[in-house]
Length: 236
Image (tube, rainbow, N blue to C red):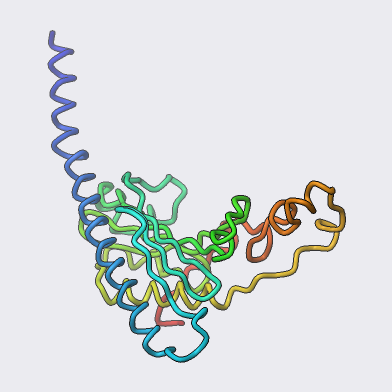
């Protein structure tokens, strides 16, 4: 009986601590994702007003896809902002564990995640389901609204800021602007000749560019850890 009571007390303790904490992280992340959606909607209006009269194909188009997904079409690119509905803890090899903030309290490591993906607009327009998207950044937010950004080159910020950098609307505006600029400067490269030099009749009938060539910026890119650089926004 004693063992059973101890297990019940352990369950209650976990619910009071970790489970309540995760709910707080979720609420914070969802709240800021709503703020992010509002920023995307506003920036699309502002940019479109500034490029009015130019080629209509370069305008921005904001789409609220669901509770956890928002989309911004920027000329030939699509930025997909996706909040994960679950809460995560960093793996033990992650540099965040070396920060004093997490070392002081391991519960500070529990974070919600907002991912930012870059796709080609034509991939959606022509239903090219094999085309590749690119994770360019992910935003981590915890129970105290502390945050940092992990991503590609100029998208990253110092892990040492974690615990000293509270998320804000201005911070989100900077992240979004950097993501848009990064995607616009990240060009589509011609695929290697040897990967497309042979095609079947069936592929021709189905249109080569849809069935034979998997299209993506840098063709076949992966989100490699050796590509991740941690920079401060002040250095941009």
